[in-house]
Image (cartoon, rainbow, N blue to C red; front, side):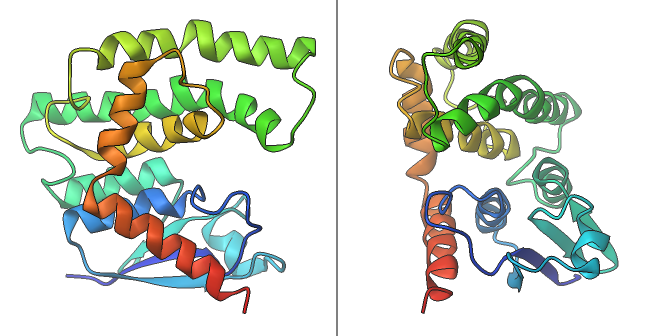
Length: 214
């Protein structure tokens, strides 16, 4: 079996720590019990080698032998195909996992990310632009997720990479109290982030960035 190597920044400022997207990959690797190591790339000086693997200068990316994969959703899909702990073998169940994986990115994160940027920047909320993003998330996305999660534990039967991605999207919304009106979403985030694999992934990421402070 080829060596899995996860690449992330050597350091980031404190506000995004615990939310940098290598956490999604760490979490999946821990859930699957796949051996891996973490390598650092410079946050301040992103060179040609970095852009060769991640054309936008972001993180994470993963190497699996000769493969180099960027974008957290693509990495999670790749890992799901390697482990039945992350994606079940039955065709119908795999299809369900994949559709929710893409829904997390294209439907929910597409709405939550601009809203979160406003929150991270402490921008003035009483503006037409912020109200537009707030409405998109709070009226057109989260109520639909609330209905879905009201009667199921996980999105596609058993826990999967779709839950890793959806929870990571929703927990950032929850950080800024955006799930206050959505108890099923809050409960979903709480039970997923209580899993030992998440706790280890989160702790490891926080330790990784804190080590660069010294």
